[in-house]
Image (cartoon, rainbow, N blue to C red):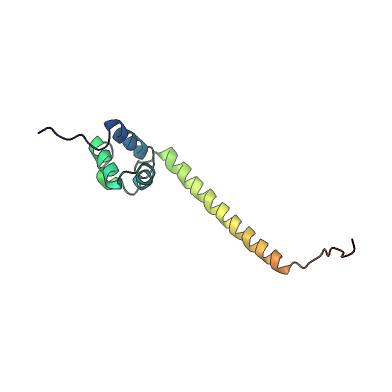
Amino acid sequence: MPKPNPPYAQGFRDQMVELVRSGRQPSELSKEFGCHTTSILSWVRKSGGVGASALPANVAALNAQERQELIELRRKFRQVQMERDILAKATAWFAGKSEKTFTPSTNS
């Protein structure tokens, strides 16, 4: 009896492996392309590049420059979040304190 064809073409599996290696999360790819997360993880393991234990947390190891950039981006992101929160509080405060300053006339 001949072996049945795999449900996913080899090209598709290779593409999923490359996307995971480029930094995409297997769970995101699973939702986007309609295949199971464990299938994607299995394909990555079989391809040989990344160890199985490192896959779920973060797929590719970062070099020193990428790590430094990530640290800087996280710092900037925290700063932007803090600024956004301050502006939201200030907006709410001014909205609560403001009184109606313009009264349209009823005479037309």
